[in-house]
Image (cartoon, rainbow, N blue to C red; front, side):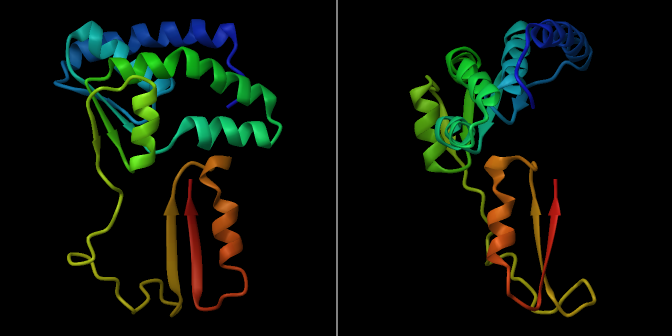
Amino acid sequence: TGPLLLADVVRLCAYRRKVLALLEQIKPDVIRAYNPLLAGWLAVSCAKALKVPSVVSIHGNYDKDVRRLYWLEGRLPHFLKYVLFAFTTEPYVLRGADKVICAYEFPAEYARRYGANDITVIYNRVDLDRFTPSMRSANGTGDLEILTVGRLDPEKNHACLIRSLEGTSGLRLRIIG
């Protein structure tokens, strides 16, 4: 989570060799990553080496969601690391991925700016015709339980969710990160 150092790059390259050796044994049909950063770089570079398709999923706009947030919070080392990604990793990943899947329209615009060609938007949503919430509590307390699953990073803004529930009753919040 801290600044990317030269030693980190050396370790990442060594890690890539190990991952590539493992993937050569597994013989995947496709390789998928969930961001255009180091995981995306690893997926796309290994997919190219193995001559298999790569798919990268994008759930946010790293220009606005991450870099802007780190800048506004004064977290200069993190901001600079993500600026470096904007000029290196993100264009490589988004141009090199065979398919980019975006969870919303706004990351699709971001992906296009960085050179993604084949973009599909698949919204994160619940089909309420298939899944109707029960008004009965499953936790035994009678309270309605709200569950959120995600990284415990500032851009996920769990604090906003917590603040939104202040003063409410009959609700329980469970955060899994």
